[in-house]
Image (cartoon, rainbow, N blue to C red):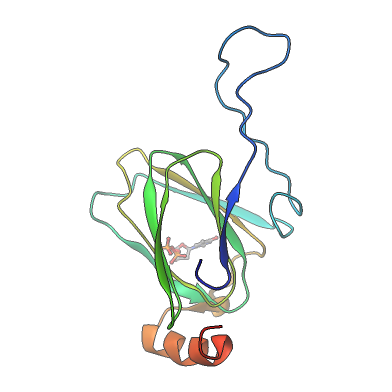
Length: 146
Ligand code: TYD
């Protein structure tokens, strides 16, 4: 995986004891165990028109976990040294993105609902939105892509 990123597989409970038959999915998520940080903010993205791409930024000091609750979306995660495209299409699949990783979200299905759990409150000053500036900072941060 790209540095400062990883996939998290949450428990997917499909059978409830003492009840018969398929009951649907129940996915429990506990902060600071299933999620490697204390959750201080959640937000969700929905109804993204076909062809729209969101993101195009990095954060200096923010951790996030992205979970697609309905439909599907693809997330490009990159540093100046690495790049990956992760399809989020399962209720129990989370994408952890730590500091200094560039992200772009694309290929939203029409019904996609993307939930984001974040370690801090919204702070525009923490964003790096200028790609050349991001590359300069990230090259130093990742020191050659280890
Ligand atoms: P932005 O993070 O740029 O969205 P995306 O990366 O998905 O394209 O945020 C879009 C707008 O929403 C921007 O004006 C900032 C605002 N915003 C908040 O006010 N609070 C939040 O928690 C977030 C994530 C965004």
